[in-house]
Image (tube, rainbow, N blue to C red; front, side, top):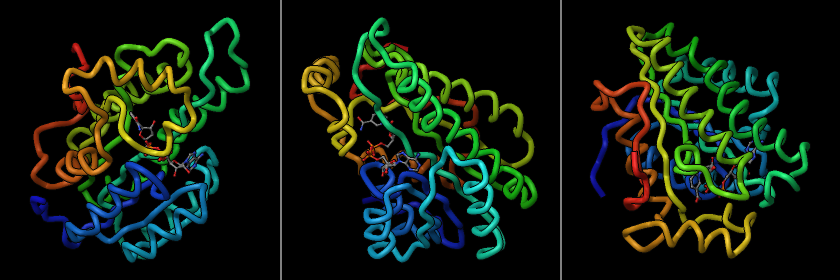
Length: 246
Ligand SMILES: NC(=O)c1ccc[n+]([C@@H]2O[C@H](COP(=O)([O-])OP(=O)(O)OC[C@H]3O[C@@H](n4cnc5c(N)ncnc54)[C@H](O)[C@@H]3O)[C@@H](O)[C@H]2O)c1
């Protein structure tokens, strides 16, 4: 593993109880960052906190007040927040649009898109105040290409890409850089939320012929979270084994 220097940096990682978020917490911690770990799943979050020494906060990223309070507490504890990685997310039920439940549509948008907005909204002022910040949002190749039977998820991730571009431009010049990643299918627990046929559809479209691993996502996140990432903002980084066509 290459070393990225994050010593002295304070990182908030959402979705840290599992999958990409947990791998990110381990990677950023190994690279020297102090960790603030946010997730709705208390048990998994406690395991990540135990193995990384991070501070665990159980919350829903869709809860305005809880997110604002957690960001204030993190800034109070460390005097700064340098890094925010928005990994919390859900796949939602797989269904064609004509049969989709509007409540499920709203749930997916609320967690994936509004949750990302709320966490950025709460953390950005602390970054702007210190003149330094790195934000990495986890979007998806689905947000670029659209996956059938997952219109809610695809639309939420397209929203995350465009939100990233808008916020990146908004805070350009403040020292805060905002980027997102568009992974293809990665081998994590989220795949348990979708059908086998859906997983097959996604893997078949990857020229490298396999799923990605959470550690491979965490490696790109680590670089995007570092000072070395200095001329990229408002950008979407591909991590799709060749699936992405633009
Ligand atoms: N695994 C993939 O194939 C893949 C591909 C592209 C993008 N992504 C995205 O990567 C991110 C991480 O997913 P993963 O694959 O690690 O899945 P995962 O299910 O392993 O992890 C997601 C985490 O988010 C948490 N979470 C869900 N709703 C929450 C809420 N309201 N508040 C706080 N935490 C909440 C879960 O408890 C879980 O710990 C997600 O945004 C997902 O959409 C995943």
